[in-house]
Image (cartoon, rainbow, N blue to C red; front, side, top):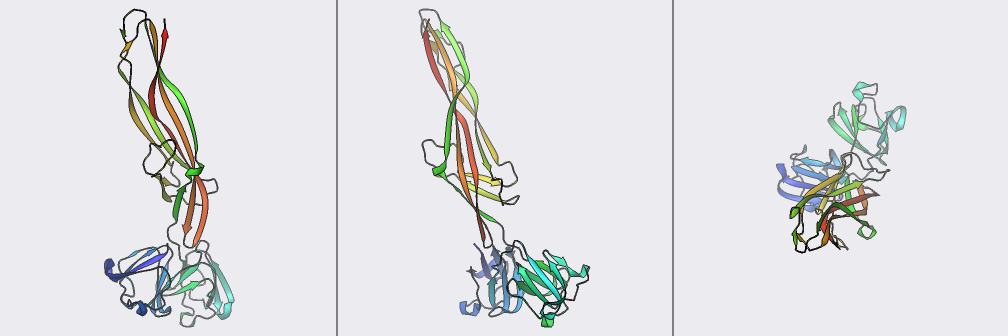
Length: 334
């Protein structure tokens, strides 16, 4: 969701309004010339001192702004809707896209080259850009957007010293486990075996402790597809709440995934198993300690949103559960 929340006073105090689309005239919403702080979620917004996107612009990328530059002087708001992934702008030394040109795809301080204060027009191939009067993002600005080329700068002519592309907000990921496609495997493993023989005619005390301790574990993991477009450090949660099936996973309601980390979590348990107290007459008693090991694999649909761009890919959640430990008894006559 791309939205802006504006506040009447600094530090996010006073009356507030929330917008998700362009507002050409705040006076129509009784919120003109009163914005003093704001919060942006998703793509950047441009605030203008005049109605219908006129006057002096200011740009706000995703984040919180406890105060704004044109305090109590914003009259219209415009959402930046361009794809901001691969920005490109061409600057021209003369009007109408003539003369020397300079193609840029990243933030550039023109003061360090031979194009400083020499731009008279521009075309934007992709993305949205902020053009600054002075180096280090200083002075007045112009907002340059794809499809809105400027053949003549007027007062900004030969005054451009710094340019930077606008960036989209943080990537958001919606993770959906496709429970109907889950695959389960179950195997039984003997992890301990104890035997005792009673050749007498009376019950005999079993020659081992009445209880024994064993270690069980649950291991959760997530695997990205080999062609994933998700960047390092991106985090999201898998919701495991409400799982219903033949067996219930012994896991927490959520599993946190981070691109670049191991994405594996193991929980260990100490499990005590009760042993028999005695062996019947003329009997060999074998006690097998059995662990049931269940593996569940579930495809995960990942809907990745960045600005106005959405992509879908798939990952895989796997849970290996081995904390179901019990005993099996086998009696043989001797």
